Length: 291
Length: 119
Image 1: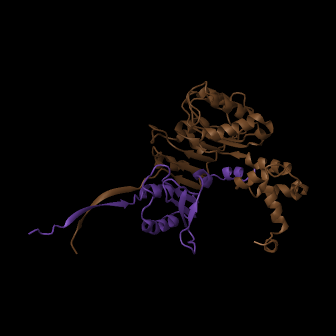
Image 2: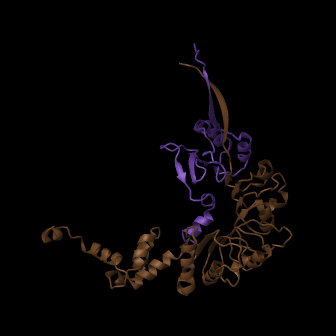
Image 3: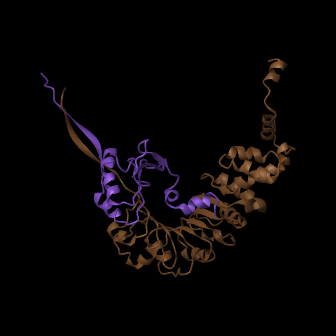
């Protein structure tokens, strides 16, 4: 290729800038740095679903790094891989700025039952550092102490562990902003009145409904029965709370509550989901006649 | 010497469970606007209704029975959140297939609001 052909194929200048931004791992002055934040932020926001580009942007300049990281750390849902989570948790425990950017974090099935496990300590320190966390989905094995020292005010919590219910109850008492709760409640004897007063969305089994519906203004329910749950018990005691429900989902692995019991109480429901349905396949014998 | 013997072949035929009684009950909900029938997360057969013909014949009855009902979404995959949508006013493109990330996102606008940063 001759120099003249190179020249004729040269890209417009803004493309060259893009290449400069993506190609370097150290920060350089780029024309983007002169853009006011009001313009820069919506441009970077457009990459919110493109983490690869966000990573590239974050390596381009100091200004862009902040904007890129602001999005990259906002919602952290790594795959179930301890290495990924270790890197993330190490980053947020090392930088309070990065930790403060995190609004949503998911971690499933990575904590085992050994209290001395280093990853448990790292998770606890990471959760303590995420002071602005709003949505937490955590599936662990018997580690409610993960919440000790946490100051965040959650809006949504999914908690798939329940052996130490009293501890989780203490934590829920501190969560005055919680609007979405997914929990399988195993201690109907405990007093839950007044806890999570702003709850709007409740996901769980019958015990969860009994514990967290009364006295709240929940508008959405996802009722997934647990193993062994009685599916034909009366729900008359929840009738007043059911009057607020506009979105009702019922059913799961273990079937669903009898609809003739539920439906008379669902006068305000606009969206109804019947889940966990099974199609039926039956073997049928056909006589195959020779043509 | 050997007479051809008609072979007996076993076929597996998927039959629809119409849940007619339960659907009738659901249609008693006075303000029902959207009905979702989902096989997630349990069914490994694939679809809630294997017979699209059954849906085409039965759903108009549901729409007629419950005047507020606008849409019915039927799960079409046991793992993926895919639904086929049926509307009171039929789409010119036929029954559309929708992808919903999570059922809760289909059902619960609060979650969507949170995710889109409106709160």
